[in-house]
Length: 375
Image (cartoon, rainbow, N blue to C red):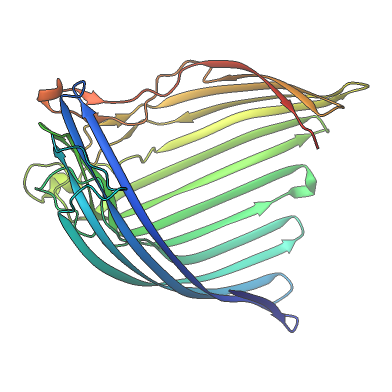
């Protein structure tokens, strides 16, 4: 339930209460080495969440507004988990034939405040700054493949976030969004992947570290006449561990070597450039041409930094024609430079040949699409 209203000429209030409940069941079957190694397991969970929230926007002047808000959330979860065990008799969590070997329940409570200021010097610009705290829910790991790592509950991840930025549309000729940010993270949640001679890969979730991540991002659209739009963006992200709570490199101890590792999936530089052309064709319809070139730096995939994600330069193109009868024909190309990228890079044990499991993303794609709008 939510209430929103304005009081007088200066104060907007939004407030409400929230309740959510769900029952989740998860089944996993692994067939390894052409069915010679079989694993069955999963889990079920009952979750209840309730909360209350409020946010007020107070106009300090015609141009400056103060934002104050907060949310209280309480979550409770009960989980029953069947560990995925080698060569277990086929079973199914969904039908109740998998025996559970772990049961537990836990609860978490959090308060998420927000404080912000906005300044609108005119109709074209909005400058803002805010601080807020948020959290990522605690829970249980249903993909438990080893008795050595119990699926004990992991706690919530908490983030204190600071951001300053602006949004503008000067004279209607461009649109600009820019921001700098600083995030202080505690109890970072990570899915740890470790090579295992029997299961292939053991996956478990732990609160691994406290970390700091900061950076900036900016994007711009520039309108030239009525048919050309130039597009661009750039982002930079930097991060480091402040305190390590888990043996990230797997050497058996917590030490400086763990703290010196890089945060996974944190690509330092990303940027893109492109353009959009569109125009009318009298008596036929309209055509458009959109191109985009995007770059992403190399980053690590696993917490021990043995797995990597390739850097990539991706070029996409789309040429389309829309008729006056709402029929659209598009010729498109994705990843035209045929860059090699993969969705992960997880190390495998020697019993499975060593190396890593790195599923490839698609390479160059060229296609033709027909779309008919019947409305």
